[in-house]
Amino acid sequence: MGKKFSKNYKVTYYDCDSLSRMNIGNLVNVMLYYSGIQSTQLGRADAYFHELGMTWIVTDYEIKVNRLPRAFEEITIVTEAKSYNKFFTYRDFEVFDEQGNLLVTLHSTFSLMKIEERKLASLKAEYLEPYEADKIKTIRRGPQLPNFDEPFAKDFEVRYSDLDTNNHVNNSKYLNWVLDTLSLEFLSTHEMAHMHVRFVKEIAYGHTVHSLAEEQENQTIHQIQVDGVVHFESLITWRSYEV
Amino acid sequence: MGKKFSKNYKVTYYDCDSLSRMNIGNLVNVMLYYSGIQSTQLGRADAYFHELGMTWIVTDYEIKVNRLPRAFEEITIVTEAKSYNKFFTYRDFEVFDEQGNLLVTLHSTFSLMKIEERKLASLKAEYLEPYEADKIKTIRRGPQLPNFDEPFAKDFEVRYSDLDTNNHVNNSKYLNWVLDTLSLEFLSTHEMAHMHVRFVKEIAYGHTVHSLAEEQENQTIHQIQVDGVVHFESLITWRSYEV
Image (cartoon, rainbow over all chains, first blue to last red; front, side, top):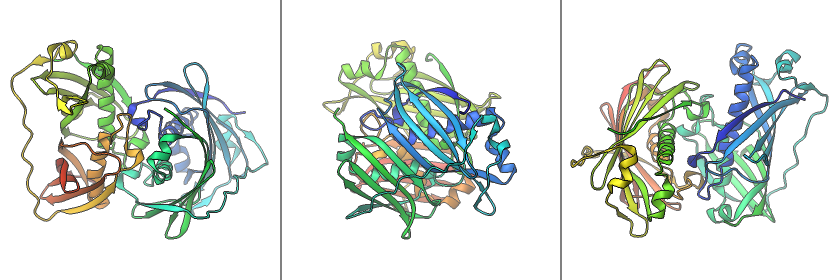
């Protein structure tokens, strides 16, 4: 069990879509930002790892949504780095409303990458000790995503405003590309119930992103390709939504 | 002179560009959000005007940048609704760093629009009284923007993620379109010193935005058109920037 860290956040109108539901990419941004604050408090800021020539990369998210936060709601985000094995660490997040109802759960998988060699570093106990994360042997495997039958697609050029301080595309933008490939009509009549996300390769300025999607029953399957190579994939389960 | 309202904000990494400078659209979002908090505290929340069948629209910004805030800086935003005439109210914002240095000034012009008729409402004293804004006679005129000689252009399709709770394109997105029309090379070697912005017409989902730009000495001129009609224009003065 990891050391828990908790922080409140007041949802703004610009965090939200036209139906006042918080954009999932913005929510993930806030969650990751708070985990960064915990790391800094525990002496494990990004700078600690940069000095070792390493940087954290996210490889997987699994998001369960009971209800998306709404504009002007005060939410509480609780996070803990739960466990780690040789190459992966597993951090969980929970989002609660003011009445203590669990709104969103996020299970995330991170790896440490050696910046020069672009290879995974093995996780030493001293890196994770301050978080009180458990050392485990098992490696979590994400689900196999269904195959496309007849996908539709949209192209997105990577923009200056897609980059963040890490000088690569901010990971919330991938989630936007996925949603922006679906129609406004679909997005307005559905709410995400579950999302699995896999980051395969980095995307850089100058890339044109080819975002494929297909609706299969209550799910949508997604793939983001650059020059025919898969950089990102996702599977979303939806429930219908009425205003 | 208006009643001042002040609030601190900690700049996140996802607010910033690849050189750790806060994105101007994100900064404007935070400023406007705080002015909304002041309005709510003064009994003039958006709901007050919606009940009267009216909504605020922004028509102009004038932004002076001494230095853009950086990631993880704690900034202080001070705002006041300074004055109003028959149709326009003038709200000022100042952004300070932790040492009290003035980083950014924003002069903004707002109007009240009658939602059904899409026409300007005249501003009654009772609307503005709680802000202690001065009633004035003069109407500010923005500058005449220079004409294009040989502009270049980029097209942007309006996306689901561009919309906010007002069910139209969030006004920070216009600023992103403007910057995203310029090259990464230019943006990485320059910093904005002054920006004038004029919102002419709303932009909606389904629109394709044609963003024109031209560099003239230390300035860039911008126009955003939809189907050949001007919806937005801007003039930016730049200074060179070295990391």
